[in-house]
Length: 40
Image 1: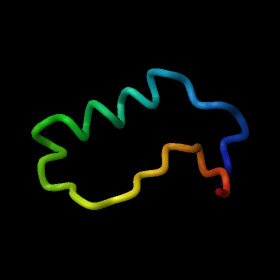
Image 2: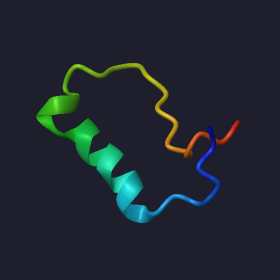
Image 3: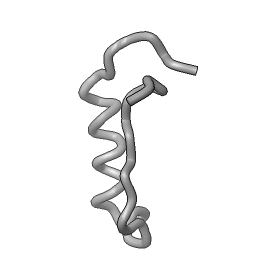
Image 4: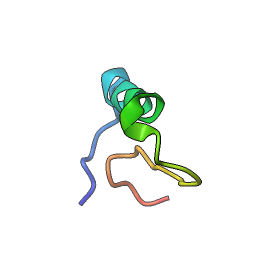
């Protein structure tokens, strides 16, 4: 279900932060869409 608003910078930063942390070390070759559920 789409959120119905534009994303805020801190929401995008949270995903980037996870990916560059040790927690994101095993993520590879994925397309992660940070779009609030909007259809692309």
